[in-house]
Length: 221
Image 1 (cartoon, rainbow, N blue to C red):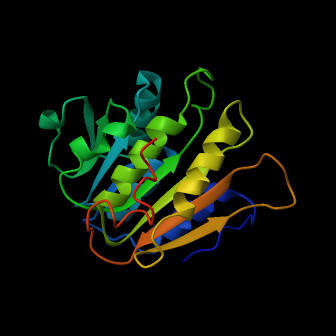
Image 2 (image 1 turned 135 degrees about the vertical axis):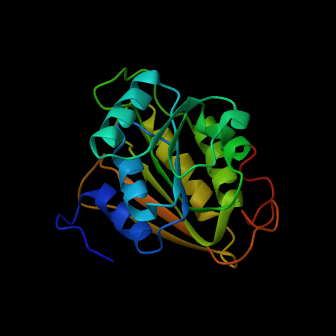
Image 3 (image 1 turned 30 degrees about the vertical axis):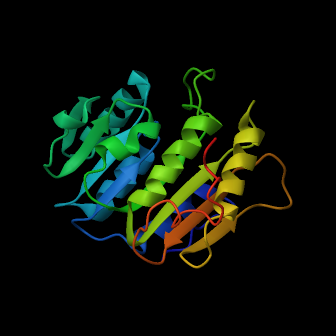
């Protein structure tokens, strides 16, 4: 694993922790395409025969992601909102849908899933991730991970509503069944309102709802 050169930059840590288990041909999921930074990183790990699903509800985000990918000569598949229209070809498939619909599009177990919560940088700040749909997406991601797969989420407590989402996402990770999940949290304790990273690795095969949380009611919203 390549350690980020700047210790307190959180996103590079998420990339480092995912790159260490990704290989060409794998399936990876970006739950928040945004400007395409994570999508490009994932493709660089799984190319040339792998596949990335990149979700976003904002057309501006998908457009920026597509532009970034094409500048790097990445095979990009046009945005789809219907799982039946999803191509099986290698490349990055743009998904114009809420990440809470992940299970509809996930045809095989994913090696990794990443999310960078909050709003689109430079975009409409009123359009941001919400705890309800975020937790739904995380639950589906956990159930859809391959054995040994990792789920990495960067949360931002600094924006309006961010502290609530951070607390709920942190609580969701905290109750993952320790017999089946390894969980890591990276934070910057001497600074306030800065992002933090949560990572979970599946230790065994999916076994339904009980495999996700220690308490059956967790994740019901």
